[in-house]
Amino acid sequence: MGKIKRIKVGNNVVLKQLELEDAIDIFHIIDSQREYLRKWLPFVDSTKELEDSLSFVSSAINVPDEEKEYMFVIHYNDRFAGLIGFKDTEKENKRTEIGYWLSEIYQKKGIITESVKALLHFAYNELDINRVQIKCAVGNIPSKNIPKRLGFKFEGIERDGELLVDNQFTDLELYSFIKKDINC
Image (tube, rainbow, N blue to C red; front, side, top):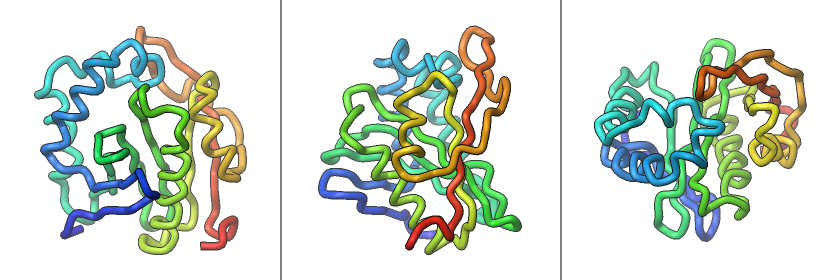
């Protein structure tokens, strides 16, 4: 992948490719917003100390380039706001999934919606991806409003698709966007 990628999303939002030093901001937000984040993010309870975030970031960035997924920190007004990126990319099938989470204080500003839109353009124009999908817990209304707002197509429910906190499974709504659906 080479040079650290930056994507300017808008006047206040920049996506910067994940680096090891970002682990400090990631851990700080998780640690200071545990109750808020743990409802929908299964990794919050297992992130107990900075070393856990360092290990996560290290595992994401220290893989061979051909296996590396683009993951970005979201900066809002030059401050860490959350993470967004691709996961489970299948280059041979030209498909990927976008995952994201945002600090509570940055909610309801359109940050994730605009960031997902920017990643769609990046996926289609620079990575030669054809299909992008987003999975959201059925009860996570703010998260599933993002693909709806951007014109993703609802494909169905993945039953017990994710194991959340307290060993509880949740159903996931699956949304997809195909390259021909957008005028990139």
